[in-house]
Length: 107
Image (cartoon, rainbow, N blue to C red; front, side, top):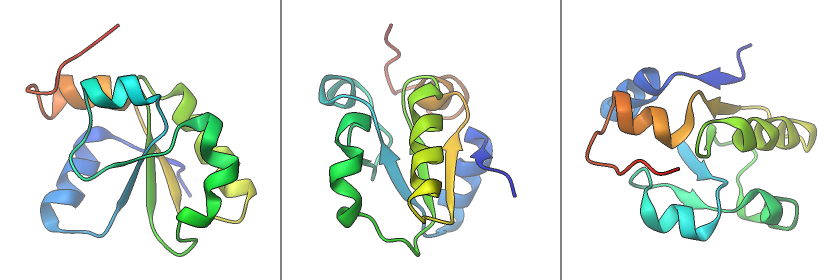
């Protein structure tokens, strides 16, 4: 099973109306600058205390700026018994470049 998803594939799934929970694991200042519509912010540092906010049965796609923190979040959630979690390859930056150019890019 793949633990990652490409931005184009996620966009296609969302356009079809698939039920995907978008988990943004960045910091609040990053989220305020750029986000994928419908996503929920739980920073990576807050994730261990916030597991009760997540549905273990849901399909969860984690994302961050470039995909590193969200890769850590994906591994962590799998270790905590969440079976259907994926990392968004390239994060919000790739989403902005390849899917939704109206979302600002940042350093």
